Amino acid sequence: EAGVTQSPTHLIKTRGQQATLRCSPISGHTSVYWYQQALGLGLQFLLWYDEGEERNRGNFPPRFSGRQFPNYSSELNVNALELEDSALYLCASSLAKLASGANVLTFGAGSRLTVL
Amino acid sequence: QKEVEQDPGPLSVPEGAIVSLNCTYSNSAFQYFMWYRQYSRKGPELLMYTYSSGNKEDGRFTAQVDKSSKYISLFIRDSQPSDSATYLCAMSAPGGGNKLTFGTGTQLKVEL
Image (cartoon, each protein chain N blue to C red):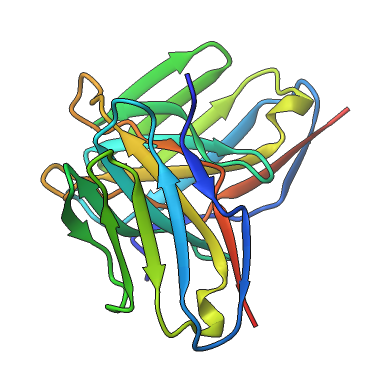
């Protein structure tokens, strides 16, 4: 079974440009999550999409946006890039909940965005 | 103050040692506690989870949660070089919009 796939692996942009990152969830998974992993800050929750709708959003400015397509794949867009947007962007998908009710997230390998 | 605090390390131990990794948290609403392992250039993978307080064992790994102290631990027995990775604790609260709050991760190196 294919895991969560993300593209591109690496992306280099300059300040003010826009970046688009893509994610394909595990087949059958309807939920997609985006996290930012910046150096020294750990994983920060960005967005949660389920069944094509944005369900929750982290404390990030509106220039971070995304969408989920009918096939459950997802796109993360970052507009007006700033130097501090340089980070690893991780996508995760989920379907199953643990018996306790907690969500099980399967992560992709990430897209590394460098803003110069 | 961060909601979840985790010593970034690096932590270096000899092969066969018992490793103790810890996180503290401030949000008493957290009920689900997880440990993820992240190898270099890979995404995090779920290692262990516990619900509310208590212990859980899986092979060489034991997860402990002490909600009264807002403190969670992961113990690795008979550590192996293949355990060298970054270990991330993560937590979530019921009704929290499926948001996981992560620690910054502890980098572990197990040396031969």
